[in-house]
Image (cartoon, rainbow, N blue to C red; front, top):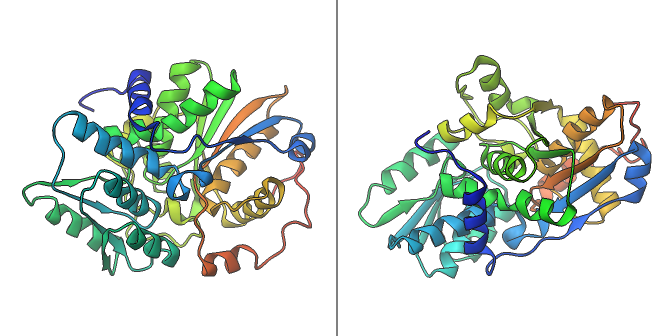
Length: 334
């Protein structure tokens, strides 16, 4: 890395974006806390602008460009969903035309939302094609590419979610966030360790798309050949970035989550917290559950719910099997 991000970068990002984003609430479930025997706090980024934490990183990056007299004439981005919406939304705020390259398997509701924010959409047959096209487009004069995760200002913006939450909750023992490309997780690590040096920070990704876990095991970035077959569409990236990977190496723990465990917690968190969450958000809950099972003392933990944008097809798949007949129990697992 050319530079190492610190808490100061997160605080600067917070100052840039605070007038544009939602101060999302923190929820708890007394029933879940009683069942598991720990205090669990949920940062509800599903109630953020565009329905996901991605609004933070996109808004901070454009604000940073303008702050440094580098306002682009055109913005491009590549994404399968929430980053696409975030860049479209942020570009509209700052009156900059945007073009988003999306794989055609992206969530229909996310494609429609991105268009509604005024961005031009280019649908590609594969994630690789979207990545290649955005690189070519970014070479045009006056065009700036905001990648989904591998950018220091994107990371700094995403880190403001954990920063805000810890400032509200106070002292906690652990922070859990999902991992796609690693932007949210990297930002959460920087913010959390900056505020609480001894806090445990852990990540989670789908076992079906475990490129980050493989990368950490082999100490070199591993890339998937094709989009993973997982319902966690917020974690369908083919590889982490060279910037984010350096932060992921500093994590205290990393978990690979089965589809069944992810669906179990998607249903239960929807039921207990009474709002929609994406399956990607449930990755963090299963990771926390596994961590809590081996703790000998009561813990206070933070879970970042990454988003709440779910299309009709995904909703049907989430609720195909009823997991609510199995109450959460710290002694059992799927």
